[in-house]
Amino acid sequence: MSDTQHADQKKESADELTEKLPSKAAAVHEIIRKEGEKEMRRDFFALFWSAIAGGLIMSTSMLGRGVLQAYVPDVPWAMLVEAAGYTLGFIFVITAGQQLFTENTVTPVLPFMSRPTWGKLMQLLRLWGTVLLGNFIGGLIAASVFAYLPMFSPEVDKEFVEMGHHLLEVPNGQTFATAVLAGWLIALLVWMIHAVESGRILLIFLITYLMGISDVSHVVVGMIEVTYLVLLGEATIGDSLLNFVLPTLVGNIIGGTFIFALISHAQVRADANLDVQKKEDEESRLEAKLKAKEEGREPPQR
Image 1 (spheres, rainbow, N blue to C red):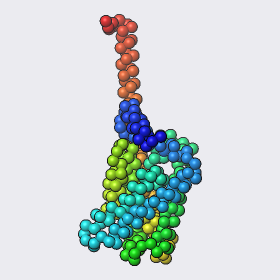
Image 2: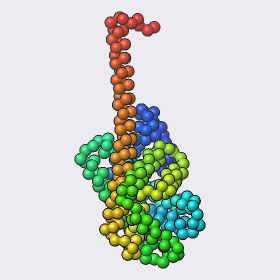
Image 3: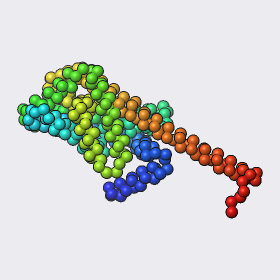
């Protein structure tokens, strides 16, 4: 099937859902829920290899930002240009359809919230663990290549080191808080991508560019940067885990799952309940009208 045919079918399906369900949000929720169901049923190795590829590709965010920081003049507006490099990994991973952990803080969560069973929870945790492990392995491979192969100029290498130190120097509370924001923004991005049929690359750029200029913490990108330091002997594994990886991981999950996904699901549940109530009211009025006709209280229509 061609990409055009696939896109057309997806658009028709989304239009049909919008007509059948009480709101556009409910239609988007249903599309993401079905995708989450499919992801949770995927084979372990299919998820794992896709996640490794995702971790490798996400290193282009570190690469893009590091190169721009090395060569953009040191002026007050430099960060507005440098942040554009941060968007590269997200654009490449999402458009390529590779697995990224922070995307999965909303996509497979909606099926669990729709039917909260132990089986669904086990499927969700299996997916999270597989993707997170794959992303970390892919990021480790990329960081090793950057650290041990003579690929970049001393200026770029220096920026890579400074980027990693910056992450470890931020207080844990601030790291956690910005990670919550990052998780919420990625979940918003996933929602918006499924709500529109065109301009998706622009959406990815805008949201991840906002993340770049806001200097928020993203567990996969940041893990690659601090792993680079560990490989060079500039930081320890313990410091990297305690000062960055763990607070960022928890913050990303809370922002994506417990804030965005939960609120979005509650909104759709409220829409559905309202729609059910409207249908019940219509059925009650119809039944009353028919009963009135049977009792002769309403003249028959000609």
